[in-house]
Length: 159
Image 1 (cartoon, rainbow, N blue to C red):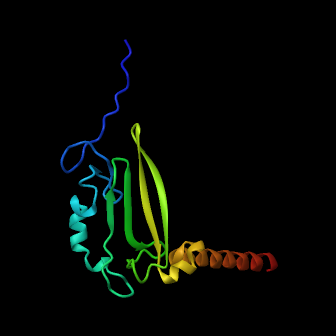
Image 2: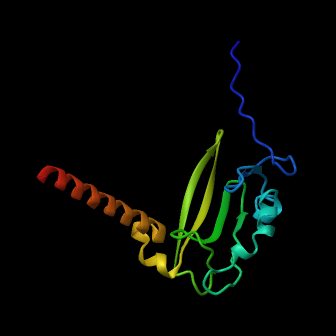
Image 3: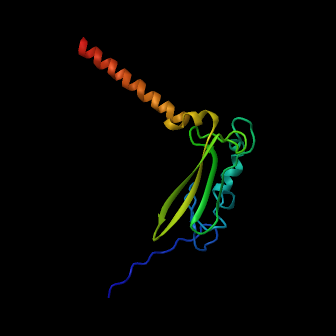
């Protein structure tokens, strides 16, 4: 007799009850109560030690990353960091552009919706089409490499 496939439901790494999703930072399976960053290890310890890194790079206001769950399948993640340069920025004064992105991830036979808030600082908002400040740097490097290769090929062909 054929046995049906059994899909085990992961349990919470903190309390052992049914998991609601995985933390995007530490990838542990967590329930709704332990999904916030300050409610589970190692993310709570990491937040406590990186207090100065979670301050706005322009004005110094606190910009702590947050994540929470509203239901078993809906999770909200706000890193309070610029997507283009990965530096922490405050919500009120220095977030120039904010975009919501929804990512659906499968977890066995279940799926979870992660609502991710993407922020851009004043510098990266102008360069968002290139991927922010870091992306623009990579594009510039690529253009310089292509020009250097073209110059070398031209010298070899003419010489």
